[in-house]
Image 1: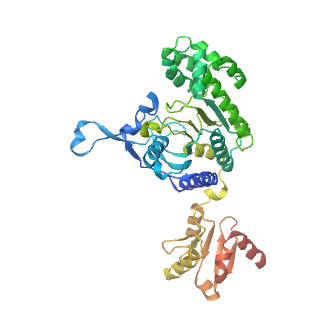
Image 2 (image 1 turned 90 degrees about the horizontal axis):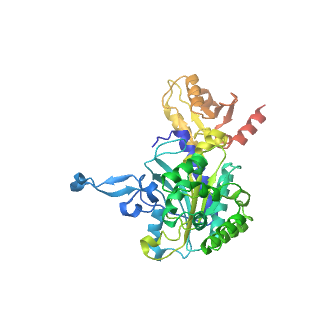
Length: 435
């Protein structure tokens, strides 16, 4: 759990604005849920690994000494969405498309791009079993990443029913499928040897046979043949083929890849599963899938659902390391610094600042009269591009001297023209005219 300094907040705000704008263009509506959920809402939804990472809250007041828990910090945004849909189904449209950008908490071990408090950027579609939903979700997240400047990402896709068919064909009994999936989900982190060891530790003796079903150049055609006459697995292959066909006409098409080893450990997934990776990051930038049974755990009604979650923190880490943020994001949040002169009334500077703010500019007033050199030095350190000087001479002539901290140039601009001139193209035009 971290503090965010001004540059961090600006970068996060930039990325969130891109995510939110893109999701809205796809027709998704905003939703927010509380940070705390009832403990029974969260437990039993994430599998054995996830349950260990839930931040539980002790009972309060007279029950404090019991050591029992009744609340927990939300682990993700999907389970709270399922609760909301179950509670407010009558108020929601038949096809409910929502996005949600809020923090979640996990009692995880911190690592590069992995934190105990982090933001997720979720987008979900409720009410349809059509593979158009998966194609649209993949397209939406692909548009987000492309808008942020990513070009080398891959959207890996698989299907839980296909995984079950492959495991069954590899000789793994249904009672051990969950154990096998937890191990397979770590393939990109620990490699084939690590997965083999974990399979054996989890009671799957013939781990080599399991790996053989998932290793090498595995295509949809090959797995269709491998799973044989298992109808659910054959249906999963058909679903994936439809998704590839539909996504081919969207921005996601060139980034979509079938990956038989993709498992995703969360136990609520029932169909397609997806994950985004980039070459220089262990782990993913986000993931998701279909969870047709989750809402029914709260409502008793079988309501289809599918969603995708982008991990904001990991996206920001990669963007920072690659230098992907536009210059304006890191340039500071202030357009101009108004100076104050020693021995003069500070009200003049405050009056000028008010005029510029009313014109829509972001203005900071140096808090105390000081030497101009120190005020210029402060502006440079604070990444403020321009400094406005309003001394007795400027007031007598009806102008304001503007110093551009990037070029070092100074220009006297009539005060009435100052708001327009401070917008960079206009400032260049004024400078050219005075030359």
